Image 1 (cartoon, rainbow, N blue to C red):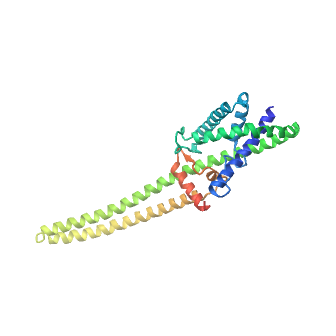
Image 2 (image 1 turned 90 degrees about the vertical axis):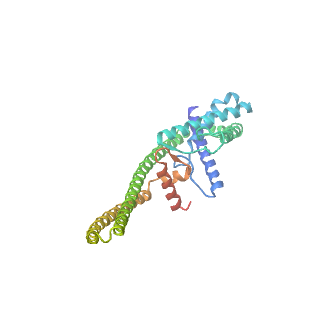
Image 3 (image 1 turned 180 degrees about the vertical axis):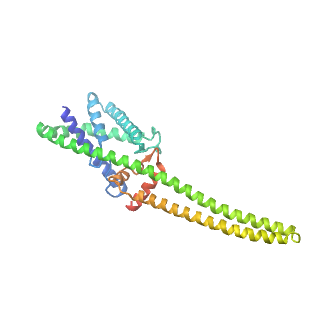
Length: 300
């Protein structure tokens, strides 16, 4: 029995992936490999259908209890999955915040009702066919199939988790560089403004002094102008050197930021395409920059 349930899990996880791909194709007009994993599996569908089929078996002939039971179970699984994934990876993979009466952005009545309707069709029409078809598969063959699927599933899961962790590290670097670029830009602007203001203040000061005491201190003004000009030349030279240094540093930071954005991580493009509304709880600004870069570079 456990072997059959495990087999059903993979079947419905594959069906769920197909549903997601069809939905994305109708919405976007192109193929998008939807789902958390790289392979053609959406585990949340497998868990959802298996839970509904087994826990609601006593009421499977009562459409009312079957529908609302399916809504409750599916919503609970989606809520739990969304919450756990966010806490583990610090990313919100889907967000229903804009849909009325949502709960934390993880679930909403609209999609919960769709789950309920889908489960009615599955329990009444699809699952009996799956049971009959799987009954013709010999147990040794089922074990071999499940062993192969399990190995592939684990490898895919490990690869996906590794990709997410590397993306998070990349987002951290992008955010650190963005802060340095912003700080360098501010300092560059402040130095330019300070230099201009200082020169302007000296000019105004001399003009005001000359206006009121022309005859008395012509020689002093002339001397002061010469001294100030020399000082300004020295100050301007130092300021130019500082500005050149900061401009060079800023250019290097921007280059490093661009290189990090362009650095390829296996699976990052697929994940971000599969979850275009994903949000990071720690580095969302950096994530938006990364998404914008990837989507533009792939003409999405």
